[in-house]
Amino acid sequence: MNISILKHVHLTTIPSASAVEVVNGNIYIVGDDCCFLYALKYDLTVLAKVPLYTAPESDLNGNRILKKKKADLECITKLSINGYPHLLILGSGSKSPRRDVAFLVKLPTPYNRKHLVWEISLVKWYSFLRMNEEVTGSSGVLNFEAAASNDEYLYLFNRENNAILRFDLPEFVEFIQGHTEGVPFPTIIKAELPDIGGVRSGFSGADYFDGKLFFTAAAENTSNAIDDGEIMGSAVGLLSFNGEEKTRGKLAAGFTGKISGFTEITAVENRLLKIESISVYEKENDNSYIAVAVSDDDLGGSDILMLQLDL
Image 1 (cartoon, one colour):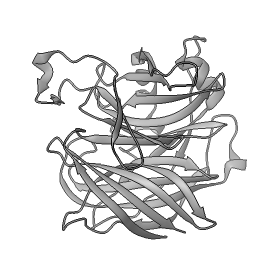
Image 2 (tube, helix red, strand yellow; image 1 turned 135 degrees about the horizontal axis):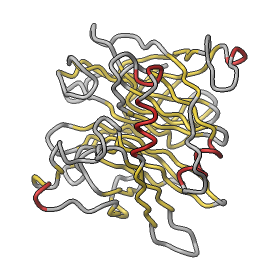
Image 3 (cartoon, one colour; image 1 turned 180 degrees about the vertical axis):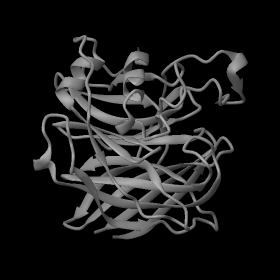
Image 4 (cartoon, helix red, strand yellow; image 1 turned 120 degrees about the horizontal axis):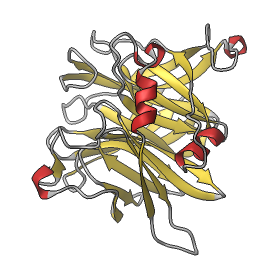
């Protein structure tokens, strides 16, 4: 893969961008210490600022929510429910119960031009996942950093051990709407990512587009998957799967993730960015895509990149 940076914008109006999703030409961004969903046009002007939840003044430092109080929204993906476009936004699950939360957002339609938001507590579901070492690794830590979906599956990515959790999407949609008491359990797929700058990299973003599962990975020089550290760099790659025929129900022995096209992103204005998320905007031709990537500057601002990905 060859990556060209077409555009870079630093925004102080959107704090700590952690996840991005493109829907019908609009760019949706959430921040991990922010209680708003932002909708942007292609030129990155803000169309809407949608409140997801309310943070008390005592939890705020400027326009950011204190680290111990934030919902840590790291995952976003688009869903179709009853034929209408929705966004699913998930907390990382790295601290319970504050980060064991989801937001389901129905996007505007010609009949209702408002964003409709439902907040959903998922404490029991996150706790259920933490009980499985295949999900968390030996540390027992859950830290979702990315989500992607197609018509069949929802994929969640646990940065702690680079496990990919694949849920049946219709089953998950019923669960997230409260239509069933059954708790969806994933097929768990393991993947090995290349190091970046001599440091282990972890999944940070993902998007399913044109039958391809794009992902971003980032490396920080830190002792765990939660605390920040020196940024060593980021990369974009493609994820496919090997050995699915070996699965039996949810048992996935020999079912692994295959990494291809893993390409590091060059420094931007002499800074290595920790890319938090990616979403493909459009397909240019058979082997070229335009994508939006976001980065948290750890100072209350966000970096937005328009990338050309040549496969």
